Structure formats: structure tokens, C-alpha cells
Image 1 (tube, helix red, strand yellow):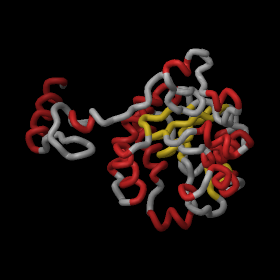
Image 2 (cartoon, one colour; image 1 turned 90 degrees about the vertical axis):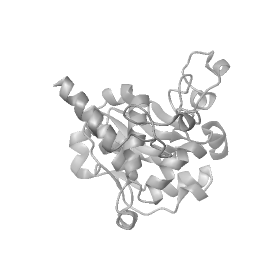
Image 3 (tube, helix red, strand yellow; image 1 turned 120 degrees about the horizontal axis):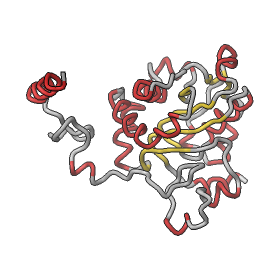
Length: 253
């Protein structure tokens, strides 16, 4: 069987040569990123804050708390964060087309990298829950990018994805245009756990899935709704980590 699989793979590579997931250049093996694109990746690896996922300088990790100064002072409501990349020009080339330009194939690529970063917390979870999109916006876009990421991660891990568990009950203006305080006020009370899923989730650990973590306003609203519904623990897995939560929280408080 292994020999037949190798022959089939070789024939497929001849007919459809593997190419870089970002720029389309030819690559060896079964794909991934070419050497030029790979050199530009800024993966988030240790040391990073266990709580909010922000990369840490080695000297900042000396206290062995596993958390940044901001989380040591005022911790976010969720438990752990894992992120595949720093949110920069490179990662935006995968995330923004997925989000706004119907490049849904990028969800598979991002989920593959998220799995590498977040395998530990996914394996500790009972369910994967994508950050929800308001129904009007979902009709306009036709898909929720967080739900696509969650679906691919579910296929890879075997952990069920429950895309309808979290629900936005009112529309919010685009948070990217708002400051930290305004984001928190705008999102407050807009996300709930759908009543039909409360019993299914109660007492279980979950991982909330999203594309980008910035100030944490949206995932805080998700976490608070889940804890109120009786979920035992909330972890967070995102494709990219942006912003500086220490500065953001100073602006909020």
C-alpha cells in the first residue's frame, strides 16, 4: 500500500507540481512555502505570553510566570492563547484575502499552521468554537472565515467544531477603526451562547477560533458568554497576533 501511495504521489506531482502556498513558486515535496517566502515568516515561538500570546523578549521571561507584564497585572478572561504568526505584511497576504476577497483556500493553509502552534490546547478541548459573525454580514460575505478555520482544524484534530454555538445578537461597527476602549464598549453584550447549545457545552473545555487577535475585545465577549453558560475553560487559537495588549489595557483603564 505504501508503494502504491508513493507512486500515486509521484504521478500527481508530475501532473500538478507542488507550489508555494503564498506566491505560487515551485517547491519540492508536498508543498508549503518556498524558501523566499519562508524566510519572511514571523512565527510566534517561545518565549511568548501563555495568557495573551504576545511574543516576549527573552529577558521578559525571566520571572518564569509564563505571562507578560500586562497579563500579570490584569489577566484576560480566557486561559491560554496560541497564535501561528505575528500579524504583519506577510501574514496579511494570507488573512486579508481570506477575509475580504473570497480566497477561502487560504483557510486550509492557515489552519495547518495554527495546528502546529495550537495542537496542545486543541487536544485538551472538547469543542472548537469559531468567533461568530452577525447574520446580515454573513449573508453579505457568504462565509465566516473563523468557521472555515475551525472546520479545517476539526478535520485535522478530530475535535468537533460547533459553528453555531456562539451567536452575535446585534450588529457592531468595524472594530478596526476603533480604539481599545471604544472596541470594548461596542462589542459589550453583542455575543451570547445559543440556548440550544448550553447543555452540550456546560462543564467542558473549549477553544475559541479566530483569524486575528488584537486588543482581545471580541474574544473577551465570547469568553464571558461561555463562562456564564458554564463552560469549564476557554482557550484561544488564532492565525495571527497583533497589537500590544499592555498598551491597549492602559488605554482602557
